[in-house]
Length: 278
Image (cartoon, rainbow, N blue to C red; front, top):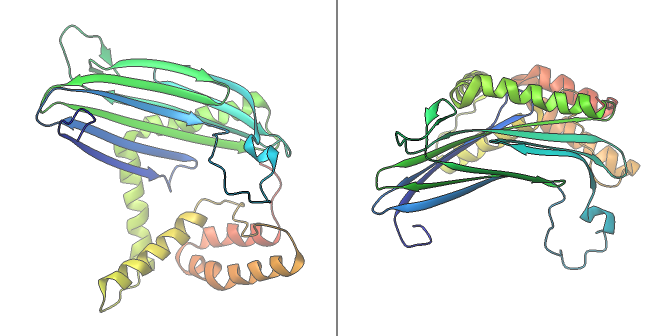
């Protein structure tokens, strides 16, 4: 139901690619059901987002409110990007986005992204935000389809232009694949995983689902770590570090060893000999 009280149908899918490093995608579709509706969709990249207070937690430091320092920002057409570095460590991080939009197709409109569309686009950026707003009026039965591709990059050693190029290259590869190509690649990767890693249980289907859910989360946490699957978090005290490493050996590495050996190798190397900044 829209804010105006009219019926709409929303279909949303999203994935974080296990095939293309540092790429994610969202497929979002809105359909008007029983009345003309005006649709406004906003797609953003946001850094240093203000969060609500956490109840006076003494671990919250002032610098955590804005840990990233802006270096460049852009938003033009349907694309946008942000590039920052961390205030303390200097680690450079960047993100870029691109969109494929399909809406109602009046004859007097210029084509957009390969097809005619009546979608209006507004792009704007600030040091901590890149926002694209899409507006369209839908008649009953008409749909607005939006595909958002996102690419990330980070480095402790790359220059500012090189870090921006890293993000742009990943985004270009994602655009070449498109949503359908990303889905096909993801399906093939997961089919191969379940062929060698699935655990089938008789009885309560909820237990079966829980086991597969846990296997999937272990996979996605380590499949593309590539030297960065370091399990240590929080204060780096010797006893806590030892406990985390032992837990990592017992519950993570064994699963990855039998299902995704390359991921196990990367996770083991990162756990005991973390790699320098890439």
